[in-house]
Figure (tube, rainbow, N blue to C red):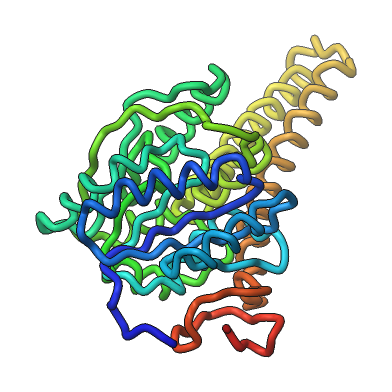
Length: 330
């Protein structure tokens, strides 16, 4: 039986990738937080190609609690796409995005939700400290957020992840942004509306290993930069002019030394340095342009963001994705 629109006050969106050690504790903590709030809520677990027993645990929870809903992808599509799928199929008048590793405390959700009703459309959680993470990860994260904030033309909050509560108005706006290379926190900032934050101390991971490798973090950083800034293209253009100017000065000096002072000593060192320098700048520029073209190409192909293998979300709720069951959601 399908639920009428907005029969849910709060949808909790939980992307899952190999989180079997954390799902039971997360579920209990979420229930312990949401039950006293006296709101109608749903959990939407998105299984993003997990290779452990995560999906089995989610099925067990869904069989016991009708508020537990799940989306099982046909393969791993990535964290940001998993969050997008949860938002697409959510029914709540508000949505909370939270990871399953318990680094973001469920106990903060009531404060975020209450703040939303003070006239805001977005209330995000800002990290005051980060426990259990290496110095290298903290440093790279800090640099990324500040570089992104300095080169984009929108205000993307620093030291924040996807942990936040957003209104239905923002969810509907996100559905109109179907680009393939998702950077959801940037999209939410681009949408606008009144936004505010609450600070918290981020705990270390409760169990298991993080699915966010350095490679995935680099890809996410590239998505954020290329999706919301053309600064790399401008930097490539400016560096091209600078190098061309230096090359012109070297050429003038070479001609002067050869034909005027006759103090010209042929050598391979300056030649090799010049060639390697010019070649390096050209390769960097081509690489930057290639990143933008690759993202344009992905959007032009207009493939679905994700493919759903199985879900228990009601059939009345449409989803902008293909399924393996002729798009029938049971």
